[in-house]
Image (cartoon, rainbow, N blue to C red; front, top):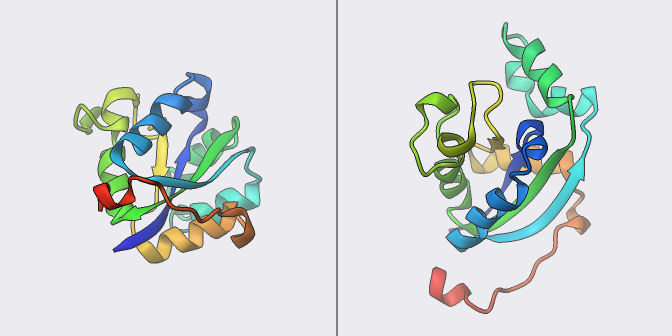
Length: 149
């Protein structure tokens, strides 16, 4: 099933010059990037993105970190994109993430964990709307799509 999801490269990965290496993993997996944007999030955008965590004790630290520098928002499309990107990202706590995952290879701790990845299709749509207007997502076909389905 073709899905669209969000992968956000966090400020720690931007500062460590990991943007290209993360995007390469997405492309090598056979997923299609249909939107790409560098942005400095506002406090309001962070509250929207992490609305499910606002009342948790770690939220102020997370919010300060996310606001500390630019992020890269990537709209990704493909078969089972939400699940595939979550698997590529690895578990949230980087020290426990499997080697070969983005967080397992590059993450430092629970907060500085390199990427944010939507966890379900409905949530992905909500999160994508924080970063992109519908007309900013570009639909196109890859010439090798039949090979990767």
